[in-house]
Length: 239
Image (tube, rainbow, N blue to C red; front, side, top):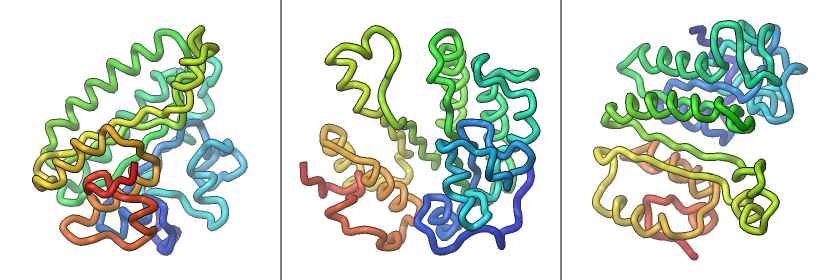
């Protein structure tokens, strides 16, 4: 675990890590691939899909105070062999890092993000990931004030189903599952979630929802009009 110098962190952006810090959270992030080959500021080694490269290279900063130490694993990282390193699969290291992050400074609230590309590979790795993720989610569920969001950037895009009309539709409907602790939700919020789960939502709605939860019991900063990104914990949907 190695926190970076806080002076390298931006303070005026609307990225979730910036907003979480404004709300008093300690932050953690892990990219989907092995960017930061030599160190976390090795911008040339990040792929276009790595959040850290997109977020950080313009201002020489990383998203979170605790960055997954990819540099220690990347020299033995084998993308073509299902993201396996000599000491285990890449996601196993990431889950272990998350558990370590959650165990430190327990008096602080924490915000953590993990990008995982293992599901791009058909085969046993998905089953292994599912088993380990289930264990992790069970452990997180034992924390009474922990919110968990699972999402993707697209639906399934491999296999025979992907070439059918139904597969085309599913590919364009990213997965989204939001598990919120009852201790944080009022009766009206719970009612809103029951209604909104059947309505069309977007990533902006999820973003706004996370901001609302971060800043409870206060209101979050006004980053967009509610008509454009309403929170899912309020009944203000248009569709």
